[in-house]
Image 1 (cartoon, helix red, strand yellow):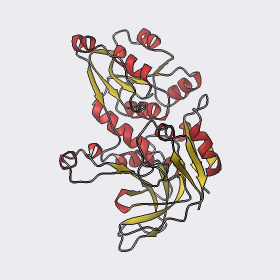
Image 2 (cartoon, one colour; image 1 turned 120 degrees about the vertical axis):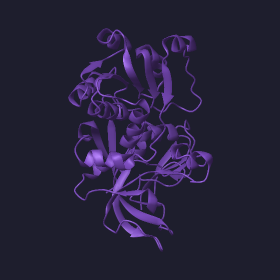
Image 3 (spheres, one colour; image 1 turned 135 degrees about the vertical axis):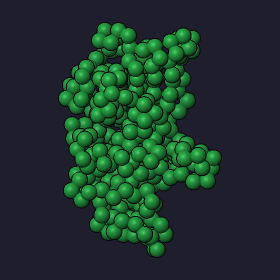
Image 4 (cartoon, helix red, strand yellow; image 1 turned 30 degrees about the vertical axis):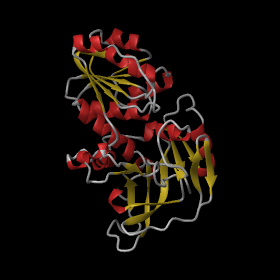
Length: 331
């Protein structure tokens, strides 16, 4: 078996570990497609906590190859996507129904081996069956889309709202599709002209290169601002885009330890709410349905496909110009 394994900071390599054997309550998945996420880059650089050595990859889709002893789950041959987040079910946040805030949260591809491999063993209860006809590349988008569904839930987007999306990466472009589905008027801000073109082609009514350009379109600001770039500058700028009484939702992942200056007086005086949305509590099924029904289209967001042999190099490098989503095909 081949797998892209993180051995330590800046030490990500293609390796040949033994094939995993599914234990009780687990499935063995033959991976068909896995998406490279910004979090994978943070993990490789030591900017996000994980437990190496570990096979990365938490956005993936494949078919069930085997079931562990006594496991009840999708039958062999079923196409599934993996919800990577494993909550304990017993801590106060879990008992309150907020499993994404579990005090003992672990994740496939971060704390246990993930999907940048030919095969992955995952908990059966984290496998979500998909339609057999779904493109596996699209199935790999279920996890990031589920995070975006949660972000839109937190933002409480309603028809007629002005929604500004900061960031033209996969999270920003998925969030804008969801906001448009919710009846919002969407403006996406990204410095890259190619990504502004994709934004306009996938549901944004407006696209701008800077916050200043965005405020020229909406002088009074946006009802909701979704910060999806995960960089300090956009987090700092997000409140400037918010209208009086508006909401800012931080969706993008910054490096652990990053600091951002924000003026509390401005938030108070304009009554701007600053919120966050972390991963995907109970939203993976909704995300899969949106893709299966064709209501969200991941296809325009796929900019490249690579094999496992190239994956480590791609993860270690900064995203190239115009790059949105790179899909890894193990086969």
